[in-house]
Image (cartoon, rainbow, N blue to C red; front, side, top):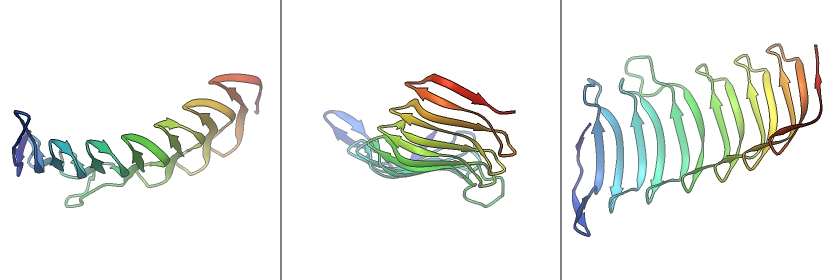
Length: 178
């Protein structure tokens, strides 16, 4: 990748990036690979990554080399002159870890997963849907480990299994429906 608009600075005897930064794919006609800002050699400010076809891959924000705030990840655009495809997922980062509610999507825009992160780990109820919008499974996590009630569904919306997890292991009786 090549770069432009980087203002080299020297800190403690070494060169560091300073200012606006754009890198390019080596063999791409479409150009940009990423666009960001460095301050004192660390990422600071908006960051945009691009697919080799030129469409936006992701948008986020860095503070002192750490992802912070809203994060958006996109499918590649397959339509000429369309800057970004549909959303893959969206959520928030806090101190470089996923935090709060995150939602991922099918390419047609229907919800695929929705759930909460705490300290970068699954926490609380997570829902997974089939592409037709009907539930596929729901289940709870505590500190990244399955904990609590879980339900599993056929793509027609009928439940086929339910039970409880405790510390990541199936616990008690699990019911199966036919």
